[in-house]
Image (cartoon, rainbow over all chains, first blue to last red; front, side, top):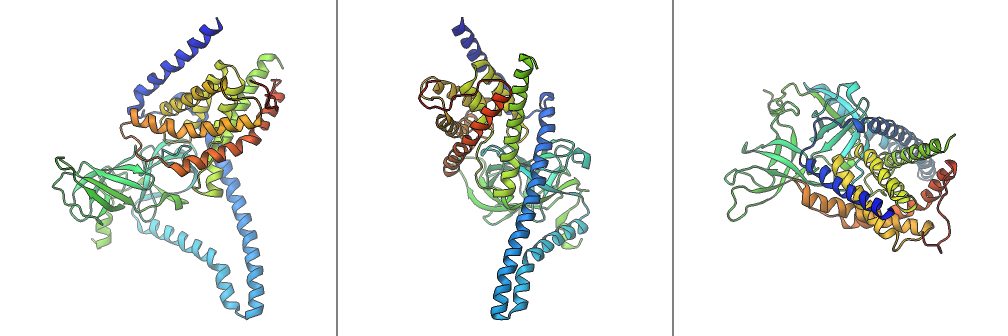
Length: 279
Length: 179
């Protein structure tokens, strides 16, 4: 009897695998209801951890800065180079100030409606590239909205909870973004490939692409502004008899070093190429 | 509290532990160590249930852990469930053949699970996904397994404590007995 029960369970589990897998090709548009309480719990826990770690980091930084200042003071007395040491102590603040100024400047210059957000979590699995940000539907974030950094696009929102959102990075193999080659205006679809590379697909064999070409957003869906950098072409290969070409793209944004991002609440059909040219 | 109450409390506490551990990996680790490979600490909950609970209970926990995980990964829920079921299957096969009671074996099981997760994810994407995974990160794979194994030791005692708290018999500390 015990054997039969075990067998039933094992068979049920094995049946469950293909049933779940059937739908794996298509990501469902709505979050399953069963996940709702788990999303709520995750939001609370990730936000708590993030707040805690920000606190710990600032305390640690403060301590480390104090240690540095003490060391520098000793050197100062020895070398009487007060001004140099002061510069060293201010470097971190200066860098942070510069970074925040750039963010502010970018936000002010842009026509877009942007929402600043902090990255508070990363993906649990190595094979997938997603991050969690500390802004959700209560701040106006909606599913599909684009997420950018100052220098290029980062990804887009795939799950939105009241206070957090899950962002699929463009390097995730399930991520797709409409893109064009800046120089030749050839159009394709950018897909994630590995954690630091993407590929531009659906390009015709005759399309003009060269190594070093900049790939930019098409802005066609208003999720991203037109002409915003995505990455640079690093390799091109053509199969002997194929119709297309394989174009590898290195994203301009390195997600590993990101701390703050912008969610595009409304791109306002902004054309950044025209903006840069002063049109 | 009634017997059923303690059982439900046990499930609830382990569910919360899975959530907390997943949050630790996703959020706290990121803020302290950045993108340095993190241990799969959440798998410790599943390991514990596969090794020291009945087959029914461990299956239920594999689904609970999958629901927790799905909120912190870009992978679809279906993939996450499949990965957890593969880990569950591998550990269940090993449970009656290789693993013994005690923290050392538990650490070994955690290491094995951490080795199985990327393989399961990679193979699953290869056979099922429209855009299969193309790279396998070898050093990341090894490092995560070692870290997961190391983190499993304190968690073994923590889980034992939760078991005692909810009036369930925790696993034995000795290595000599077959489970």
